[in-house]
Amino acid sequence: SSNKNKESGPVGISKAEMEDLLQTLCHAGSAQDPCALWTLEAHTQVTGDIHLPLLSDFLLAQVVAFAARTSQLKLVSNATHNVGQQNMKLMSVSAVGLRWSKGDWRMTTIPAVFCLSKEESAESVTAMLEALKEALLDRFGFDLAEQVSDHYLDGGSGLAAGFAATLPASAERRCLQHIKKQLAKKTKLWKNGNKHKQLQLWVEVSAFLPSNVIFHKFWSYAFDSLIKLEEEAMVTYLKGHVLKISDGGFWCASWQSGITQIEPGFSTYVSNSLESFWGKLQKIHGGLVSEDVTAAIKLPNNDINAWKFDDAFKNVFDKPSGAKRWHPNLLRGKGVQGVRGGLYAKPIWSLTTEKIRTLHDGGEPVVVQRKTPSGRAA
Image 1 (cartoon, rainbow, N blue to C red):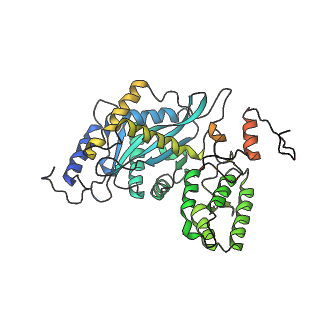
Image 2 (cartoon, rainbow, N blue to C red):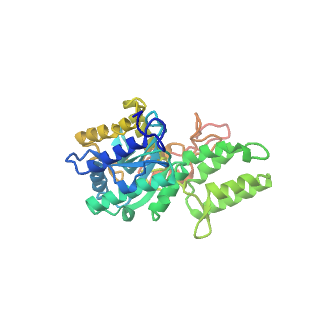
Image 3 (cartoon, rainbow, N blue to C red):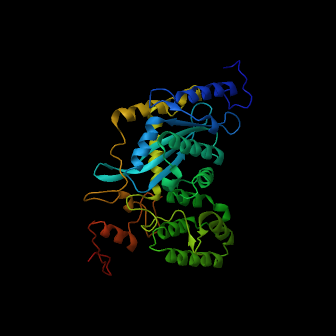
């Protein structure tokens, strides 16, 4: 490859090599192997903001089959940090479901499309989603835009913009943990002392309030309190980047996580399922680092063959069932009232009344202890 023109290509791979790879993938879709990766040339770009969607007939069929078992299709999207020596990214859009594992219902994912890209940009995310939409419609008559009800994202602005442009009717759900981590980084916005732990607590507790009216009242009071402390810069940031005004004129947020926003069994932590998936790939494939990124994209192909052999997605469901219907995340770092939350090593387990009601309605035993003045449980 050293003799090929490297102009406009990423470090270590030439434009000509990317074009050769593109042509190979464009023709792979006609192969007999349903696990083979292929792409749609209309949604690719091999220079500048490089993006190369990677599709598989097997995965497309699994998503369509899962959608037939659910009334509301949910998607999650995220990206790895580095793929190959060129430090490109491998993004994915996956369907979100539940699997019974180790005595609990746990969130899991069914990969729908991968995308090799230079950046997690709005352009590359849009190209990935448009390729997925076109492939599903062309091969299965499946209209993705009509089926998706929610999409779960972490803190990436490129992901949010791409989904908003491509699936505007889908409700955006942001990862509550990522929001809290972002707030911890905004140290320069505080005028009179860093209060990010208190702010994280407000976010965590308010996320599970039982109504939008109470949520609105909570944050209206919080803003007034911050203004009295002369923290106008933080208030401006919160209003512009963390919360928004609903059509009804109430403060709301995409990270609200109560049972009025998130279907029981799921949570805004669903992006962790995809991050866990990336972690497993990195462990299996040695950190997803190879001599060349053109070799790295072959790795998902090997996994797809293994998923097909194991019939890996047949026991993924859209709702919990049976005696134990509630996901353990209902008790993990959510609705906690105390000075510590899900980001800390020792969270305080003081549950909100909303969470207690959710557990009770789900058939879980709930024991309420009253403490005496001496501090002992009565």
